Image: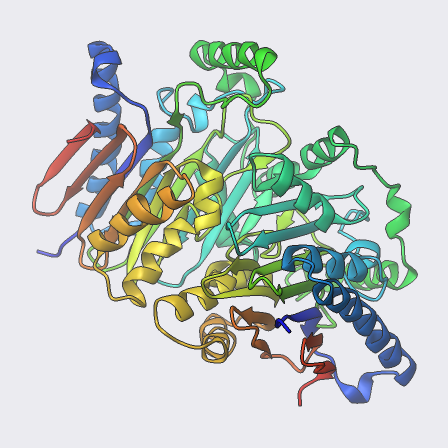
Length: 310
Length: 310
């Protein structure tokens, strides 16, 4: 039997057990489990890592609990601006979109950019025009309305009145979803998707859609998907750092992830975490915050669904 | 006397001496020399590497010969969409903008994002709103009209009628400008600015505004600015690769640049070049194309202005 493995995340941040409602915790675990099963099924049938990470991220995008796709937060102007990326470790091909508003599953559009254009990163209305020109439907922005996210925006706007420099992410939860996979052919892939930051302005783009920053895959080393304070992950080139530490400094997956999450990112005050799989199928889920919604599984039947620090 | 050094580029590609008009060659050399002098003057007076690269890139943006700022190429829809980034090697701070249309000097806006926002990358109308909210003027898009670029678009549109898959960059010149500097305080900085690709569609973003891809600076190793087939530089995380090869694999500046330009990029068919300076002030200008507009100088009085391969 050939080996495969999969990991996914639904964001990191201040997630404290004593502040979590048991019903809500159950909802999160159920959603993480559903996404995990979806990916493991694909890999078990011999499907590619690339296909698995796309479908896992679609499942997470369709769940209103996570800040991506359906559950995307509101921008300052009351819109939803979503970013996503996908990368194939076999040929280093990558596709990404940012600031899209009318695409149900941004990760599918990222895959379309990878497969059907000479480009890597398309933005905003241009990316949406590309989608339509390839037969991908636009969705009414109302689809992305959820009361919880709307209330979060009202709270953020309220706080803004008091202090413009206030850290907007009052709940300190970095809403992003992502997946990494190792398939039976020995291939790696990574995908990440996000609804950005509540009360986000100025067409801000974070690390999620940037190959090397929030998303990276290379069969020579590992596949990585990040979640956290996006600007710090960009400046650290966080996902690629894991690759570089493995390939050039000779670290193993766990050492490389530890160095990025607990040394390099904190050195510039970067908070968050990442999930990674190496080219032997080893899985690492590491974060420097109180919690990270995460799940993992492999061909040995090992399965884990976790939220808090161990 | 303390050491300083500076390098700049005005794009790489198929630049053949036998196709160059001597008058035009003189114009290019004059423009490269003017930008070089501007940067060396700043460094000679003890100015920072960060200030030097910003002013050098402004000088190149203001020159209609190069595809950035004033000389930006036309998009498919007849607009100009510009990208720029700046990064400081001392604190790894970075600022970048993409798809801006009404900003005379995109690198100045990138610097403003770095200095006056918690963000790294702002896009399009949002980035322009940020500029205005900080007192930066918008410019009429007519400023960016040049007959040469307009004719290039008409040619590209004409070619498009024949083949949609045709390589649009018929002249195979990767229009980007950039600068890297090492100052008397031992600090490194990098900046890059581009007008993108003629006939560009769909809100395409290349490597130039992405920290790690087209622009990177870190006092521990080097400052890098790239020019070339942007998508391949993004997938290679080209600028950060130079840093990683120096820091983790122990290569010197020249070995690291050689590996990126002549091995890593060509392995996925990436064409172009880069300029880099290490934290001892050594300068490397390397490219895998026929030419690269480039200039360099240092505190020893060494000066070079070159276009073709040696």
